Amino acid sequence: MSQIQYVNLADLTLPDFQAHKNIQNDNIHELAESIKSIGIIEPLIIRTTDTGLEIVAGCLRYHAARIAGLKAVPCLNMSLDPLAAEIIKLHENIKRIPLDHIDQGATFIMMQETFNMSESVIAGHVGKSIAYVSQHISLVRLDNELTLSVKEKRITFSQARELMRVDDPGERHRLLLFCQHNGATISVLHGWVQDYLRESSPPPSPESDDTPDPVFHNDPHISRFCEACGDSVDIAAIRQVFYCPDCDNAIKHAILSEKLDKQQKPPE
Image (cartoon, rainbow, N blue to C red):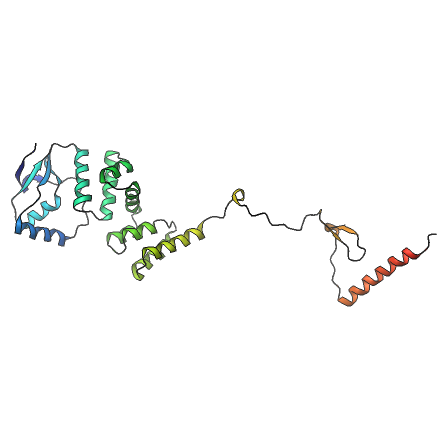
């Protein structure tokens, strides 16, 4: 079993990838004041590499200890391969000293690229859902104003998650400004995004549309009855003319009279 030992700060090296990138200086100085007062409560976890003693967990404590003026810090030297070391970092940074959402996404991407870990495997290690891991990765990969707004705490991660559903940059920017300047709640923002998605959705395909096709009366085989003679006439042969009511009645009367005359005239 590894024993806690005091190691000189000068002998410790920082890992190539440090999860905490957006930690505020105030937080480090606050930790330094605590260390000055009661010392380091939890030892740093380190491992031996080809280049020396690498800090696995405790980088913030390392920086704060230097500010506090310590020369050596308590450490627990563990035999860890690179993957095991990163898994411990995940637990340290997600469970104990929470990373902000951007640093979490950057850490998940590093795990993917360095150790070929899937989102489901990462989720299992940190005790989060696959969707949680995927959304954080997507947010960091966007690398746009939405990512910066979360990083600078102008919007919450929950708001960003809703805005990521909007694929139109202009509309996403408009809604982002509402969140930043008008304090849109999650429920209000969700409603806006739902409205956008409904309006931008393509119309249903004819195969899935149960509404019957409209009937257009331009089929040449449809017939109409002539108002003068009463015969059925192919609609394609009908001619449309315009008369005033008096002329219309006079023409119809003349046609009817001629028709009656023909009926009453004896055959030759």
